[in-house]
Image (cartoon, rainbow, N blue to C red; front, side, top):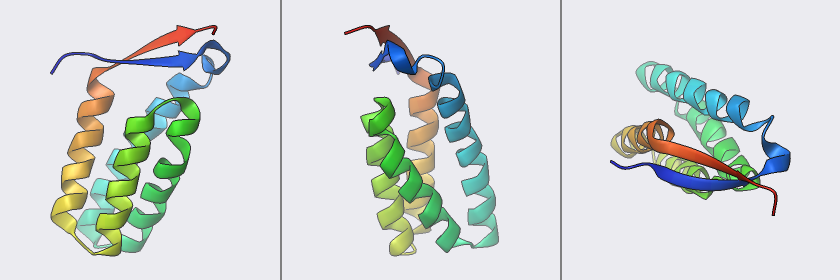
Length: 101
């Protein structure tokens, strides 16, 4: 897959690396929660992603969070796993471009 260019406000430049690293940590947590059968906590993490992604300029993270939250509400493990892979792919291919406009 080619790079996914995302333009983010320059004012958020100091926050973006930590935000993206925390989403990588979420992947690890979700995989552990899947193994432990803790769907409720997955729903909470997904809800947070849904709420935070767009605020940082990452609309795709919001969409993944929404899909994952819905999958958790329906106890659809296969769809949760699919969304985790989608998030991993997104994070692996994102190219953040900072803009002052």
